[in-house]
Image (cartoon, rainbow, N blue to C red; front, side, top):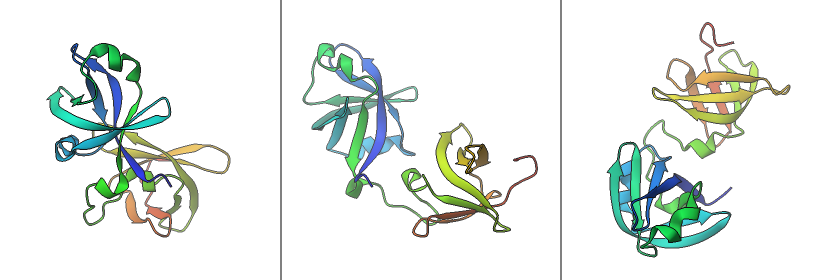
Length: 168
């Protein structure tokens, strides 16, 4: 398993001084303020960069890195990723888990019927939705709400769900 967490995707640039416009992929975008450096991954290459400034604009984080001070240096960074080492991740609370730990997790109903593996996690406005694929490749969408997700055993790689009416 990769020892890094993605906390943002580079959506583009902001201004002419090399500031990156980041779409946060973390639950808490203010976590950028707690960091001194990040790992910039562009086209498969990684580089440690020092944070000069963090600001916010609409739903984006504006990230200025000390290594870049001109738009021409960062224009090709679109679709890159902002990573941090796993040990810099925010601690989890009770009944919390990292999204990356859900992929390929086995999903069963509360009646012990095997539904498949989590193949995708969709972020929506209200709650996440888990895309569970069965052996035939058919996807079942399960909302990540307490009424549906009864238990998550990260160590055992098993999620137990209650299928509400109309989910199939």
